Image: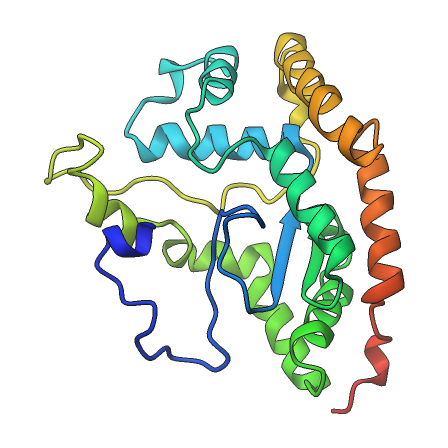
Length: 240
């Protein structure tokens, strides 16, 4: 949808093969016929990441909206991507049904062992990649490497195309970044009221659908899916 708003032709030639797209769509709405990598993250940490990004994207000062106000806005439909909880349910159910098409990757696992997770992703997409290919991918996706090239990941192209639609003056420059801290556990700074709101949504959405009472149980479910359908190859076994 945003590609259309930005005047991009998704059928035009790309710089690499196979073609690669990023999307916030659910499994139910995304175009079919591809392979999919779906990244999950603890909802409270994802909340912090979104809080750090969206107000800055809209040129609001950090002091202009509290955690509680931001949470209430999200629950009221601020994000057009839908709630993270229903997103989890839709994609993980799809991964259970179509394991050859969908790989679920956890942000926490990427932080714990980036090389091993890149090897898993590589095996899913490009089974003939070499150790050299994987090492190069790891070098380009460390937090330090991405921080040094943060403007490649900050959505400034979309901002410049859409700022008139979202009521931002043409002369305003993009200032948000998606490479912030790259950490696990930022949720510790959230007040109890927001944590309670997030937990309530989990209890009402994820637990009935997937049987997982919290994120750690969801991670266990994802790891079982990975081990069954997408075991990470031993990195040393890749040819040089």
